[in-house]
Length: 77
Image (tube, rainbow, N blue to C red; front, side, top):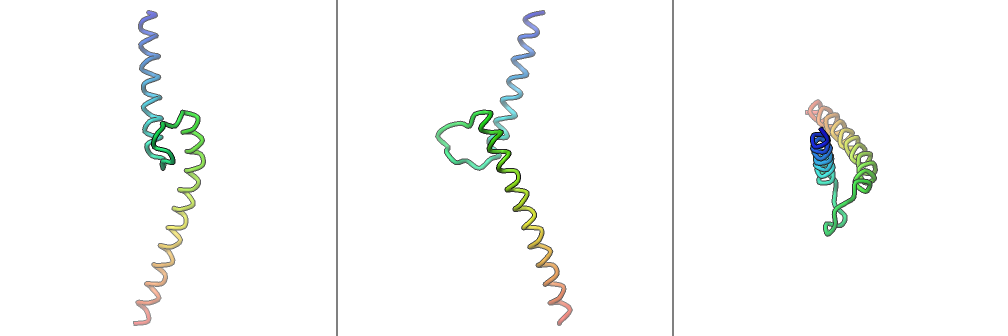
């Protein structure tokens, strides 16, 4: 019984560590010589996600402008 709980806890920690490793690898690296801690990974993610959202918004605006300009340009011809 105790052995089973220990194994379950070990598996749970492995899964969490694997998920944090995946998250960490998705972030831009500042210092490749050392691994980010879990709290560092969380902190970096909370800063990075809004940056990516802002970049996505700008890209969508640029796309819309290009589409509008290409429609205007094709109507002139």
